[in-house]
Amino acid sequence: MNRHFIAIAAFALFYVGTPVGLGAEPARTFSFTVLEIPDIQRGAGLAIVMRTPSGKTWLYDTGTAHPERLSSDGWLANFNAGRDVVAPLLKKQGVTAIDGVFISHAHYDHFGGLLWLKDHLEIKKLIDCGYIFRSGNEDDYRGTNRSELDHHNLVRDEFKARGAHITATAGETLDLDPDLRIEVIAPPKSYFNDPKVNTRQKNDTPSHFLVNANSLALRIQFGDIVFLLPGDIQTEDIEASLMPFVDKSKLKCHVLVAPGHGIHPIPQAFGEATHPEVSIASVFPRYAKGIKSTATLKALGAKTYITGLHGTVQVTTDGKTYQVTSERDDTNKPTVTHRVPLWPGKAPIGDGKFEEYSKDLEVFLPPADKANGAAIVLCPGGGYIRHVTEKEGYPIAQWLNEHGIACVILEYRLPELRRQVPLLDAQRAIRLTRANAAAWKIDPKRIGILGFSAGGHVASTALTHFNSGDAISTDAIERLNSRPDFGWLVYPVVTMGEFTHGGSKAKLLGSDPTPDLIRLYSNETQVTADTPPTFLAHAIDDKAVPIENSRQFVASMKAHHVPVELLELPNGGHGLNGCKGPLWEQWKVAALSWLAAQKLIPPNQP
Image 1: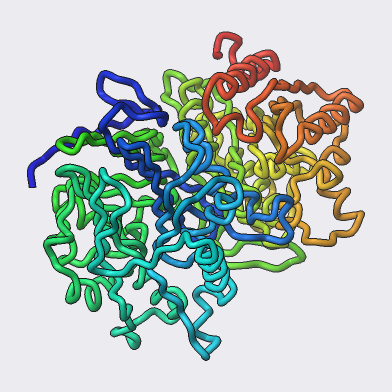
Image 2 (image 1 turned 45 degrees about the vertical axis):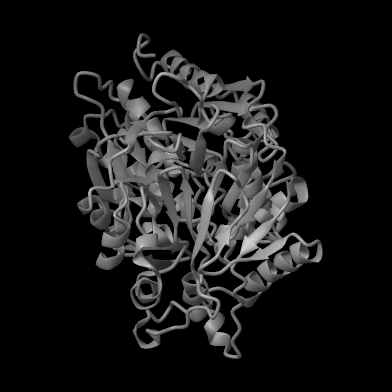
């Protein structure tokens, strides 16, 4: 197979010579966009948007969404990929109706987005393989619960009832679009069974691996360019089921969407048969660096893309050549200067109890000729169920380093109703930074804390619940003061009261916390004259975390005569337009100016 592609890594998607962004494509091109799905600690997620020259729009999977009764919007982590990732792209592309949605298999991280899309956009066809997992042994559902699989069956029945469902299995060619040749390569009509039942990992049950094994696998061809979408089929099933069954010539491709998010090893026979020039794995940063498919695919000569590192990846082709563009370059992450264990093997969870723990702080020090002695402990957001480090961590560390400020990224433990855990981690990170001040060439009296969203609750809790240390502790670190010297809070969760973020509150305090607990963790009520000076930034149209969180904190700070400043941004919503653009840059400039005004960095530093 000849080489036909140009790979481009950029912070905005573009073609050579002609900017197109993620909007409408030039005539006679096919676009294939693998969207970045955020990490909500439940499945890796996959969503692909395909646009053809005839104007048709096809989706292969729709990304993650998990129904959640306790969440304010009905979705776990207030996130539905259909609403929050797929729909915004379709809007940019001018799409008002979807010609068809291919669902690879019945797991929420693949069909969850459809639950929102089907109620808000016209979807003309739903295509899947028709596989239904059934077992009389409840242990078989430990991997994926029965209700999740049943939910997909209900959606399928909904489309069947209006004559809009297609069952597709191996050997069929789907005549759906004049621009595309769409061949189904798996599963067979009889479906794959489990040939390796005795070699599975104990926690991998049939409701997970058999549903994955029977993913709807497609070979899509536009002109001369071939895309292979094998779904979530795992290594064992590729070896024992797919490879003996499939016509190997149908596996040869230019672009491979890595099976099972690329997490599992690629069998040698499959790699040699597919021999892709480009592979794309949809997986979040938490797994991205360690996925097992990368080495095999690189050895075959493939250019590998991982959404958690590169962001959204788009392939555009005229049928003869193709180009790959990505939102970001995976080399953009700054170099970690030090990794420091947060806790020495065991970490406190409160009330004198401990748990095994081995997470490191990531320390990013500025070049010696730029360093000004200030440092910031950074707490990424994520609704207390994940860490959005790829947007609210590493890029911020790099920016701070460019301005001479050391950055310590803290991926605090997620509370899971252990309400003291995030604060304990934040206090420990401040103490560790102070303990290493001489070695890292920072001023122990200029150590601040920065938090975004739920990370803003961690940071505001650290700003209002500090202590001078335990003088009799055998751990020298714990004898140090945990008071930050300043704070930055960006679209923070501050209160657990009326204006809180429901998902964060539920994860931290549970569904029915006492009034005393609500007040204790409503940090606007915990401000004193000793609270450190703080800068805040918040969009007035933030619906997820209302700006009242910041306004109430500012009012309390002013009542106690503590220096404070709030930058109220006119729009941008929660996350300030996805952590990019003019408003995102505006808070950064303002925060540095405020820090200089507080005489914590040199006045010319911004």
